[in-house]
Image 1: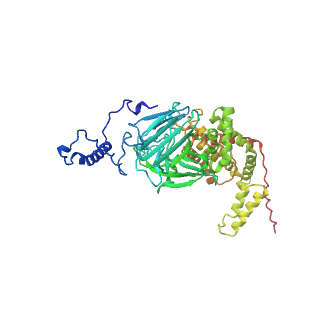
Image 2: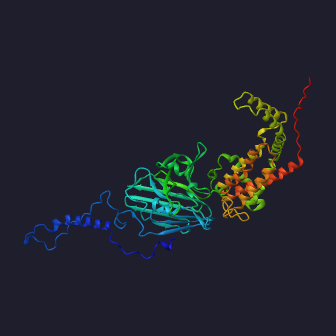
Length: 566
């Protein structure tokens, strides 16, 4: 039903527009030209006048307006359809609230009820601040030929179904006609959408645009997280374009895509064609200020379609794998786990299962899954611990070898002999020189997997834990406890780990590593810091256990032979 904000329900006063004045002028001119001979012809002789003269021939209608003349009202031009005033219409379901404007038949706002922004309000995925410059979503974009009417400024006649779940827009000036219709479901993020444009009965190819960015605008640097996406069924690949892709102009792609649309980190608006038909995707870049008073930054946009009549299913909602699969199995590809998908997907499933069945909290789920990962990797860590302890025990022998060759230059052939002696010593004691790096190397793939899960899994968005309000974002406190705790535990772990070098300078550099890690982690998502902190605490326990229980032996250096006296 119409919103109260759309204007007064009273019928506006009739206004004699310029178009009607022109039409009236044409009619009067035609009447004057046609009727003048009858009114100003020579008068007949009196004796020939008839008492009841025969009626004159009816006036011919005025000629039709020429091509390019302004449109006229529906009451004058056959087939004309239009609304009389601006009006807003609201369609509301259990999942979202969408406000449409009949001027241009566009979307003014699309609010997702179940997801909050940084201000605690339901997320509106429409960038309304950009509309004055680039237009609202679902505006028409024409490929080559444009109709002889501004359809994005036209006032469409609007019809809302009795159940409130369908809305249809129609406009015509007798020559150019446009229709848009959307059919919603009560509890689904999927909408059926159709658009048609014709001129003189001939369909005009067009696309539906969504420009000025998309998604949650309350997150920092939101425009950098937004992309145009499309999935090619033939190559089985997802293409992701940012605004920089279209810095020199629109980028055009076409194919039989499973879906195409626009996304941010956690939400997407994607069009799914009927029957896998060919359609076009355009990536656009619009310079817009990301915040009031700031300079322009490129915001990604898209236009999708390409036929005179476009039919799509439109998904606007969260990138939740369960929701996406329920709506359409193809949509699961929207969640892109990247290069570490082989590890990130199982990790995501493990976190979800732990949250749903054990903890009911993603923070504790991260802790339990991290504990499980570290204990599964413990046998490999034991091997690394042994190698590091042996290397520590071999340091006096290595130092003796280095002293033996201390005056040998790096290009001296004897340098190769020095390296060979050290390698022989490692081999004799079954030591892997790189073994000390193994604990760190084992954590790196899981670090990137956790990072990806926190970046793309909407389930983690807004997940709280103790004092943390959102595990997918850095802590909101001025001084962030998690990174500080991570630095402290990293320092303790560093001190407990056997040193593999007797060089004091190298040892001091290693002690600076916790500060470097703290600097790196201070601005990342708190869930990622929680993962690394938990790994440090487990590493301290494991290292303490190994230092107390493990014993390693190394071969002693050969005893020096006494020289015989002469």
